[in-house]
Length: 282
Image (spheres, rainbow, N blue to C red):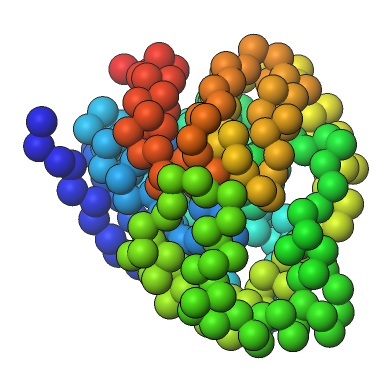
């Protein structure tokens, strides 16, 4: 089967411009929407975007402050701030029914939007993310949350250090081009955005409980794909997502870390595509 092309254009929401990646039938009111995490970008999803575009409208963008999006200093790097951007983007794109595919911090932004717009929220794919009840922030996050220490850490994060840090907990390894693209985007403004984002989200427990209370009664279909070796979000949380999605289908990938769609791309793509096929309206 020929590869579906992923096109790129600029999307502007609230005065903030970002690269928009699209595949599949443009203009469909039902879409699969991909949300990257930290420190990623919409480019993380190119492989899945192309595959999804064979049977559905698929879209992804770089969150403000990340990738090649605008990085204004006054953007509110909070869950609410990013969720507001999501709402504006989906309105601008005319998406009325959304299937959310989320990774890492993208899960907080996407699920907060879903809780606020249940009538437009169709299904969820949680890739190493979700409602994190009982979660304790990982060591790196605690460094970023510490004033002064976080800034020192960011200043000392060279390209070799970045590769070494992201290599931890990824037994299959991550492609050099993936790491280098991510580092190229990890400029001073993005590092500042990361610090502000993590410092604004210390109470992940309360957020997760409120999120679960809103989402659980909806009983939306959900798929969990989780890397067994994720050093940031322990695999124990993979099977706890029934707190928000009672009918969740969970898969743990034994040889994956924090980025299953990168280190186990074929298995991850098969699981996600099969799930979406079952829940998209055709």
